[in-house]
Amino acid sequence: MISKELEKAGLPVAIVSAMYPVAEQVRANRIVKGVSIPHPCGDPSLPPDLDARLRREIVETALKALEAEVKGPTLFSPSMAVSG
Amino acid sequence: MRLELADFPVSEIRLGRSFRYENGALEIDAAHLEAMILRDGRIREASLTVVRPGEHARITGIRDVVEPRVKVNGAGQVFPGILGPVESVGDGRTHRLSGMAVVATSAYEGTVRAGLGVQRSALLDLWGPGAEASKFSALVPLVLVMRLREGLSELDAHTAIQGAEFQVARRIAEATIGIAPASVEVFDLTVKRPELPNVVLVQGCLTDDHHVHSGVSYYGLPIRESLATVVHPNELLDCAMAVNATRCIGYFPITWDWQNHPLMLTLCRDHGRRLNFCGMILQRIRYETFHGKEVIAQNAAQLAVTLGAEGALVTWLGSGNAFVDVMLTVRACEQRGIKTVLVTYEYGGKDGVDSPLLYYVPEANAVVSTGSRDRWLELPEVERIVGPYEQVKILSYPGAPVAEAKGPLTLDARDMVVGGVDNWGKESWICTAY
Image (cartoon, rainbow over all chains, first blue to last red; front, top):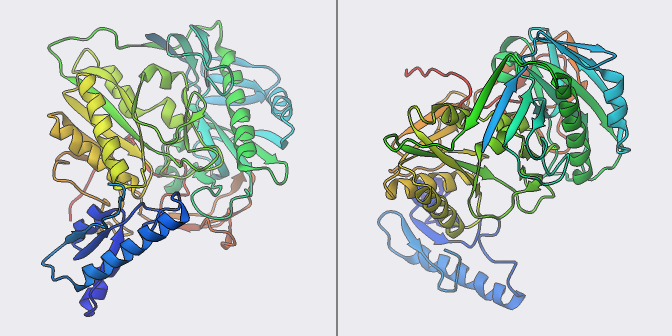
């Protein structure tokens, strides 16, 4: 909902969410698959170097999503293994 | 599995010097029970009070509500895995004291300061709008008021409170041993009629796997990350399901609800008449990834197919993202050709105009609402407070302002009233469209 309000104000938004179908339901435009509800942007169960790579991957995916032209809700998946 | 549930209705409780049941009047030896409770050194003070429905009274600090029961025949004992060993229950004969409840109250600060593990307690009014908001106001409450030793951990507080209330519940039910009941109901799902539809009940349970008590226990074992499993309804009647006794919230079913699960009871009573009740699926929900939610939904639906289900009731307990697991379960059942009805409370905000549910799937084409959790409640001033708290926090965060428990209270949701949310459709509701 916040992302939609920001977009109304003219700011493109990429929302990183583990509950991406809920984000689709409220028709957020750029949705990035997050890892898990308590930690969408990383995975603390991974060794630190792997977690750092995963975090970078998610942020880069989100930045690419911001640049992309979309027509309606679009899902962007980080290529590193993310549950689901 | 065949269970005879013998009913001893209670309309009056007297604090006396012996345990006796006669024509709806229950006498209990309060001094004996208090001494029994205080054998647990973690409990500093314990007293028993009787309140009458309709009295201008408010009970504070409620941690759980339980119906007194005792097994008089068959393997095991009530509250298996908690009061006694893990022995399979659900067979034989069990006595119940209906129309009354042991209301366990306790002062407890907790060591967890915020988040989903923080201790919570609830209120119950026995009169007025607060009474109308909860089915528990119709029961004669035997209120157990406790104070615990300072600084107890959540696990200690839970086991102390729960141990006390369950021991009291079993001990007073023992007053009926050797007496003829008012009625006996037989619960036996063995024989199925092939011409009737096969129906299952899917009970989603939000549990917190990282807390000392996950919120829901089976034979005393808190359910954590788990795939779906099948339980027998008779196990619920013999009190195999229990809850975390440090967190009582209006939208979380408590021990009494599990003993008297209205959907389970209705399906048992309709068995062999309108349908075949093929079993109850206990499904842990609130997986933290969408992947997990999809797996548990498919897992429960596949179990329903294995039980031969043609129809399913899906219901749940909890809040928030766990509802996604529930909706995915409805979808997974429907996709397998099982006609599925969802039973859920709704949100809707103060005025009932906000979105009633968190998440939707098109397959959820039959949904029964059990009312709104969000409607505000104005509680008038009462004459008498029973329970450990003279002051209450309306909000649960640390340092939240306190209000006089006796005074008029404005509640911004039903969370603080025990039974304030009708999770599984025990009560009758009508809906008006404006």
